[in-house]
Length: 271
Image 1 (tube, rainbow, N blue to C red):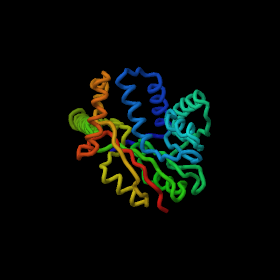
Image 2: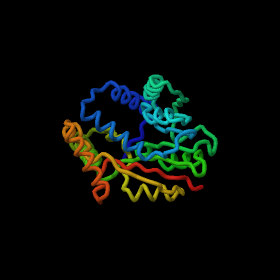
Image 3: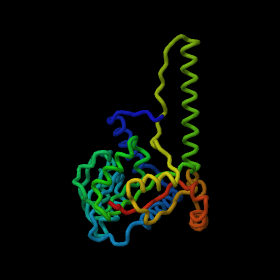
């Protein structure tokens, strides 16, 4: 199972990730893939964004925060990583929009009840050991009738299946090494369990069940990321990119949607 690292270690990990993501090289295929995932997500946003008060939990580099601000919403952006918030601030300055940025924990939202009518929780809960606590906090600060946009990775996506396989092989390797040290070398050996960002992997029915248990009514949902992790290889040409859009649209209507990288869900708080 996932090894719980201390907060300082996790902050350092995500701060480094933020810098690498910002300065890393992006080819044409990755630019297309990232833009497409962004567009698939905003497709599901409510049409009436003007005047909305939002909270973007795990805002990262602020792409969705900027999108909301430019369409007349106001609110807050929260992230565990100070480096991600630095890049989010830079993105807002470039677009001449503003909202308060908060370096904080999704498990401890520093807001009053019913503070927001729109909350974004995009690719967040799979990283958090106590994701049910996060959903409880979201429920508390989201007003009745307010909307939650949530996305999670799907369990049977090739990318996630490969990660789980590699983790299990690493765990077996660590266990065998411990046996060798103990019974052959007569020495102790305590390797750190492998670390993965994704602690949880969800089936589509799991996500729907979790939301319905907390009285969220599903309004809409869509899928993205069928080619992960092969996007760099497969999506180089414009012709293939156009073909991918057609294929993805078709797959999302069949049982093969369960093999997408993630599902994006828009739901309403029925409390």
